[in-house]
Image 1: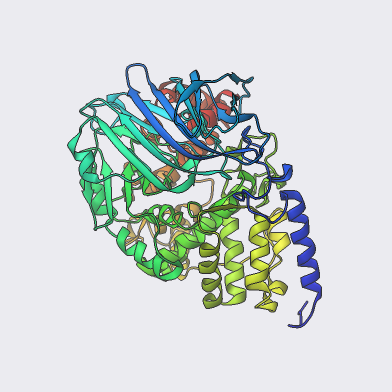
Image 2: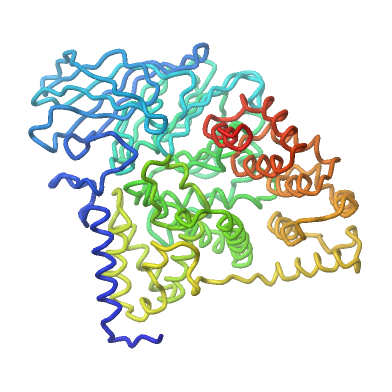
Length: 637
C-alpha cells in the first residue's frame, strides 16, 4: 500500500512498537545512566551482577602468567560507584575461579579484609561472587587464580604454534567468558576503563586490547604495562602471550604475529590504513588511537575478534591475494559499531553485528570497488539463506529471546546478515546520503554507550523516519526486528560477475566445456566459492575427480575454498580428499569450518566413525568454545 507523506497511521503504529520495546526492555533511558536504577526488564539475563546498585568503573589487573600450571594468578582492583545508598553487596560474575581473598578500602586507601561468598555454579552463567561492601567503600580488590580449563583462555604447547618453540596463551572473552579469567560485572551494559600489569617469562611478549608502545613488546622485559582510557565492556578485555614480533604498516597500524607469520601478515593487511580512512570519511574519526592486529595460532575459534586497539585474527585469512581481508574490514568496522556503540544485552547483539556487516561492505566498496563488495554480499546472503533453512523460527528473529540459554547460541548469521539487510533496506528507502548522515549521527550520539534495541528504534524514528516519512511505508521495522524469516521487501543483490560464473558451472555440468578449459583465470576466492556452491549437492566421484585434477582443490591452501571443497567431498564420498580432511580438521580450530564439516560427517554411520576418530585427535587442539560446539555434534552432548 502506498503511504502518503502526511499520513499518520504509520507513526501511530511505530509509536506503539517503540512503547512495546521499551516495555520489554525497561524504558528508553540508557543503562549507563547513574541517575536512575536499571529496571528489571533491562537487566542482562546472562549476568549475576548488580550495576543498578553498585557499578564498577575501573579495573586494575595485576597478573602472573604461569604456563606450567596453565593459569593466571594475581588480583583485580575495582573502583566502584555506589548507585544505591543502601547497597551492602557488590556482585561480580565468575566462572571456575579460585577466590583467595577480598579486600575493600575507603577514600583513605587503607585496605581491610571483607567477607565474601561464592554462590552455586551454573553451567552457563558460572557463579556469583557476593562481596560485603561497608559504607563509604570506593575500591574492592579480589585476589584470585584461574582454572586450567577456563572457558575464556587457551593455553597452547609449542607444537601447536607457528614457531613450534614457545608456548602461547590467548583469551576470548565474548560473549560471557571474561568471567572465567577476571571477576567482573560481565555484562555488555557495564563499561569500564582498565589498566594492567602482566608478568610473563622473559622470552615471551604480552599484548592486550589497550595502549602499549610496540617498542615495549620488542624489548621483552617480562613485565608489561597497559592502559585502556576509554570505557569498554568486559567482553572486549583481551590478553595474549607468546613469541610475538611487531611490524608496522602505517603510523597507526601494525601487525603482531609469531616470527614465521609476521611478514606475510603485514603484506596481506597492508590496506588497513586505506580501510580506516574510508570509514572515517563516512562515519567520523577513529577514536581508539592505534589499530593493530594480532595473528593468532590456527586454533582460534573465530575469524576475528574486535578487541579495541588490537583485533585478534585467525591465520586462515592469510590467502596471499588479500581476497579474505573482508574480515579485517569487519573487525575494523567494530571500532564504530560494537566497540563505540555496544549492545546492552546479548539479546541486542544484532546492533553490534548487523551494523558492522553493513559498514564492512561499505569499506570493501570504497577500497576494493563495488563489484568486490557486491560479490561478498551475495555470498553472505547465500550463507544466511542456508542457515535459516535449518534454524528454529525463534532464532530467525533479530531481537532474539535468549532467556535461559547460552548467549553463544545467538551467534548465527541472523544478527550479522539479516541485520545488514535491514539497514540496507533503510538505506535504499531513505537514499544513501540521508542514511549516511543518520549513521554518523547515531555513532556520535551513542558513543561509548551500551544501548538496547528500543533505544535504536526510538532514535531511528526521531532522526530518520520522521524526516523521511515515506521510509516507514517501505521498511516494516517491526517485522524486521521481531519476526522470523526475511520480509518480502528484503533487498535483493545480483552480481553480473557471478552470472558469468554460473554460466561456467552450467557449461561444465552439461559437458559443453571440460573442467580444465573453464575460464577461471583471474578468479578470486569469491568466484571459486560461488562456483562450488552453484554446483548440485550430489556429484559423481568422476565429476569430483575431474574438478580436483583441473584445479587442485584438495591441495589448495585457501581455507575458505578448501573447506567448501571438503564439505562437497564428504557429501559425495570423494575418498582422495579424506587425508586432507583429517589434516584440515586437526590443524584449524575455526568454528565456521569445523561445524559444517563435522555435521556433514555424522550424517552417515561411516562418516560418524571417521568424525569420532578425527575428533579424538583434534579435540585437545581446539579452543574450549569450539570444543563445546563439536562435542554436541560428534558426542551428542
